[in-house]
Amino acid sequence: MPVTGPQLPDLIGGRFRIRSLLGSGATASVYEALDTVEGGVVAVKVLHPHLDVTPTVRAAFFREASIARSISHPSVARVVAMGDDGDLRVWTAWMFAPGVTLAELVRTRGPLPPAAALAVVDRVLGALEAVHAAGYVHRDVSASNVLVQREAGGDVTAVTLIDLGVADRPGRSARAGDVLLSGVTAAAEGIVGNPAYASPEHLRGDAVGVAGDIYQVGALLYLALVGEPPFVRASIDETVRAHLMALPPTVSVRARGVPVELDRFVVRALMKEPGDRFASAPAMRSALSAAALSSPRGVAASMAVAPSGVPAPATRLLPSPVARSAAETVGPRSGASSLMWILLSTAAVLVGILVFALVPRAAPVEAQERPHASSSAAASPSVSSASPSPPAARAAETPVPRSVTVPTVVGRQEEDARALLAAAGLRVAEKTGSSDGTDAVGTVTATDPAPGEVSVSGGPITLVVASGFNTVPDVRGATADRAQYSVASAGFAIVLRHATSSIVPAGGVIDVDPAAGSRSPLGTPVTLTLSTGAATPTPLPSPTGTTRAPTSTPTPEPSS
Image (cartoon, rainbow, N blue to C red; front, side, top):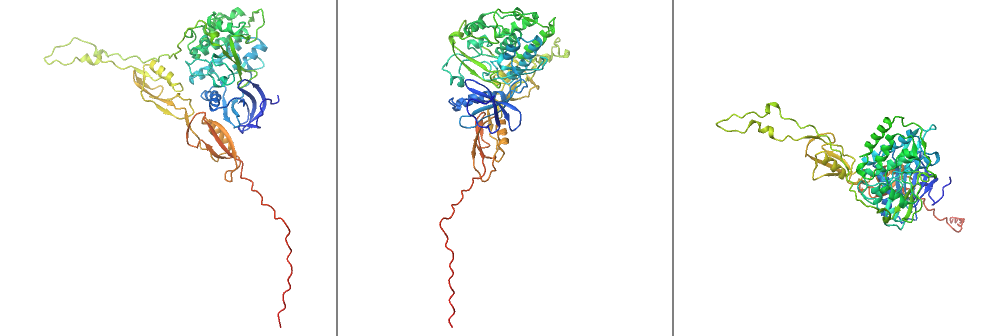
């Protein structure tokens, strides 16, 4: 498809050649592009130039890419680079994920066979394990944000979880405070999320934790097996009320022949109380495997979908007067995978409010058994003595500290790490160190003692926590490609400028701002000034007028 929309330079970031427009939303357009440095196809998201691109808006736009950098998993969309080309061209580049969205797949092919549906959900849960381990909750696990690649025979070969635009730390609400959204819509109050999949606590504006993602995975599996989300109603307002108050639906009511094990699995995931759902993504994944194995008919059995009376799309949300506005943003495969960000009015969701305090739940680490006193130290009748002395058994009465294995908290946020250590019977030292690097601020990068080592119950643990800063690399004299790679790998955004230089060859880096070696917050735009070569000398003006030819002057004859 020809490129339409805002005019773009031939190369984004001096590297990505735009080939076609994938889609456009309220805040950005997404293009398919060729990576001229490393080869391959990428998806480039470009912030709309008409937005007020202040430093705050720029930082908010880069936040999604910064979160993605902290997550490493084959089923999570991977960011390639991010930068600012000047003239309001703010962009992020992502690995191009193959396949179509689950929403489009179900809409065009109908509900998935159970084996395929479970394969998709299993990979989504694997991706969420990585997201949660990095200290985030996704908060928008929907059919539009799951890309599925299948073989000709229908087997699922790859699944990619995309769009971290709503992701945040556990325990925070999803109330509309997004700088990008507030810049394009008048709705300042409400909830940011997808009402077809959002959990009850999400829709109430309460704290959202891992349990919120678990709920959304349950809704995702329901859609994959039935063909539509679990609480399709005539309006957004009614859908929200159903999430808050209606009983979780059973798959077998709509998909005949589904084993009872899967019915129970989906119902548990969709429980209203966060504590009644699966405790974590790994726990849910294990339960999914158990449900598949214990099914008497096997998950590969063909199931007929019961008619609903009226055909329903993958996500059917009719316009509602309760909704203040709707803003759409796009992920790496917009169009097929666009995310509808619904700003629900507070009045619509404040129905039967019950506030949940979602504190990360840490499973206590099993401590080693306390050593028992030896039989030789057992109490025995005392023998009187003229010189009384302390009983020999007194030493056995002294409490022996328990041995505790230090749990792995590296990669977690400091607050979560402290909770896990406390649950294990350990305490965090008053003073903790900090480290610079590419880890998100507040992420635990090391512990002392190290994970797996043995400490005593109540023993102090020193945490080393990421500062959110890094050192600007010295790329002066490097080629533009190498410099951009180094700066992006260090966690900074890139701004390109050009200037002439008689010293640095064309394409090389003349200067870096902030200065090379300086300490700057992650995501800070680093300006690379690239050489265009030596300035072309201005030719001197040609002489004007005519030059008189020399005249011969007779040499006087010597006098005789």
